[in-house]
Length: 344
Figure 1 (cartoon, rainbow, N blue to C red):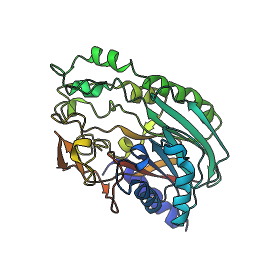
Figure 2: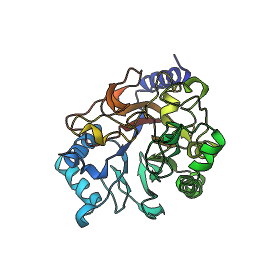
Figure 3: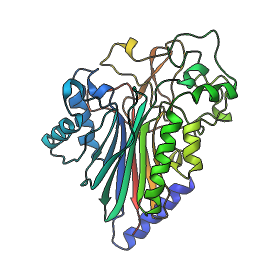
Figure 4: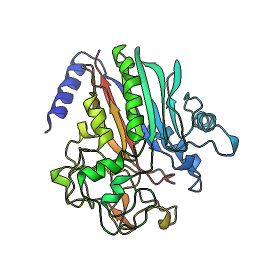
């Protein structure tokens, strides 16, 4: 049994002995694929899934405010009709929902030609100040596709996969993803210094160095590449922890692939950008700044158990835990739901 789970069991035993229940905070990262417009019934399905999970916070990727509407208002209203009270604020490209009153919100990295965004909110949960960030990072210069033999801007077949690590990093850094992560780190440093709980959820459009290791070099068309991908490396070096990898440290048994998800409600041709490759990867994350009084105890994948592999439906055979859809699944990603416990 891994040490974290042993610690958690001991902690729960201690709480039971004192007659107390541990306090919880949950966060749900959810790429909603053009705010649900690609899938028939997608918007209502987004609301259904959030209402089912009842997370304290939702970090959203791809709100677009189509037809001069405010997605934040529409989703808050849809959740209210399901008996769930949430708060939000206007944003574009990424967004935030909170079950707790929002005391402040701001733009950390604004949209520049669809190259990604970062927003934040402040709130209070169980009497503790919390700051939550959402990011939908630049989808261009997507170099992990080039490792699989597809151009990271046009998604056309390349003569051969790119496997030189220096070249991969150089080409990857042409994106704005590292600038967006640095903007988050700089802003969040003030929140951490003020003693606030800090979460950062998002679709990074970039894998993790924790997943591209010696142990996985022959998995999912990595083509032998072992690489410390820049965005997650920047977060690690700034002290942040990847909640999914803390709960599930082995990327072989628990790869946690979030993209591309199979979706039975969409023509299969819309679900794969590299139809002759195994493009499965974990690009949706929930990071947090570690604290002595807070630990992740549950991290699950939300969405179909099936993924896209070489342009076809493929049922995952991993040890990842899935919360499968209620009905219509609104997106080509899978979500990540993480639960934390707080000590008094």
